[in-house]
Image 1 (cartoon, one colour):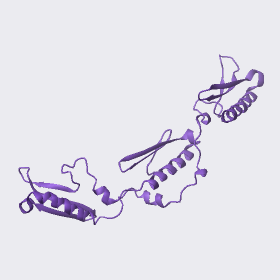
Image 2 (image 1 turned 135 degrees about the vertical axis):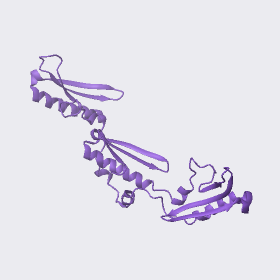
Image 3 (image 1 turned 90 degrees about the vertical axis):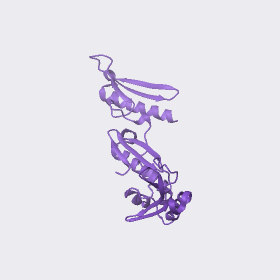
Image 4 (image 1 turned 60 degrees about the vertical axis):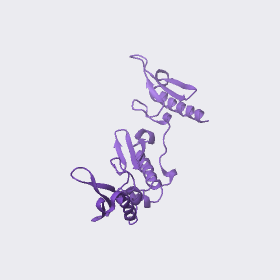
Length: 229
């Protein structure tokens, strides 16, 4: 999948635009499962692709590379066997089998050879059109109709995520046994930032296993309603 990497816990979206990397993580647990997380990852990737189109080829061709030693993109000296400049070259790649090259000998132009090459490079760039070529999938993504945000899976809050060690299948509801031989109890617990936690336990010995579990689930829902009120 273009720009999306599958991870054991979910999906990672990573795209680079004009030297800036855009990254976001989409966990299975946070969105309710692998398919939901993937839909969210694809939607975010598509948004980045549409909001940050590739730069113009001409603009990219004028970017000064880190290994450039002349200070002018597309302009380089031709050196003699002794390592001294004998000419300045302006070079531009326009497309398949279409490369523009013009050389200015120092014997003809003297110290003006470099300036002539820089001017020629600008004339060559004037013939360059279009956008920088990226992954083939990008064109299809940019033409795709926008996804209705309301139709996408919402991200779950931490209180809604079912942890791996959860035995009830319901976030915030756990079965606990204080010691060996104890019938145990079901507990509903909800944490609110800055306020601490609220919990309530339901004894299996008194209520029975299933009833205690159901009451803990109902209590958890009550706690969540109170939290959001």
